[in-house]
Image 1 (cartoon, rainbow, N blue to C red):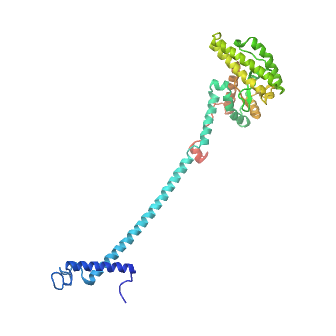
Image 2 (cartoon, rainbow, N blue to C red):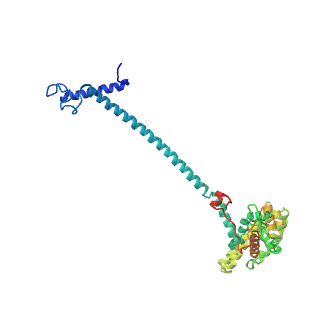
Length: 357
């Protein structure tokens, strides 16, 4: 029985090839038996402990070298595998940290909806405290505030003391419904129109009875195309005549602008004469009603109405309504400050920990 271990055939073949290569080297350089110096030197030409091994010792040394290389290769392979495993583990750690960072940023970054709500809240605050005059007279400020005021009016724990409204001024407030931008406007008083001084004359006198007749028919849903076309034709004539007077410098710029604004408003009201909702505009169904601010807001919201632009000469009523709305909003939130303060958004701490201190 051999004392050597049983190796795979490929490994044994490699050893044999290595041994043959070593033996050839010894023969070439004259080391070992019968070298170039002749004689028998069992321990190499330099004596014990020096030079190359000969015979079986040389073969064993080659085997040991191969085995050492094989062991080093296995050790290096295991070290590389361990290195790869550590790299994969570090990838997982990096991935987890990336996920945690994204989660943190997501939880502490305002969403699009939160930014939109904050912007709207800031807009509401500004429109209550410091609206632009044009935003008041156009009705846009009131329309933006309607949802907020309606919510305040319906919450009994927030609703402030009633703020009364002057009914004479309230009747001057123009309202519209749906996609219409203009209300009954200058025709809301049964079609009786107060014309600017510059536009008064024969054509205005011809148009007055036609407007009253048209409003009466529209209130009953009996408006006719013939009457409508007659009215719009005369309005075009008045407009062209006014433009001609301006070019001839028969009227100044301020009078021209005042007249143009009035005619634009009248055109919008006349257009409603053929609207399917004309009866509601001209029989008083669509109107701003309410003894107090909260009643006005709830009536407007219930009917789906919105504020239309002020008619020439009615701007004061709109500023009076703005003052009443500001008083109501301030009172509904305690009234401790001279200016209304609306809270916008929540802090990061509140979003993370709630209301706990």
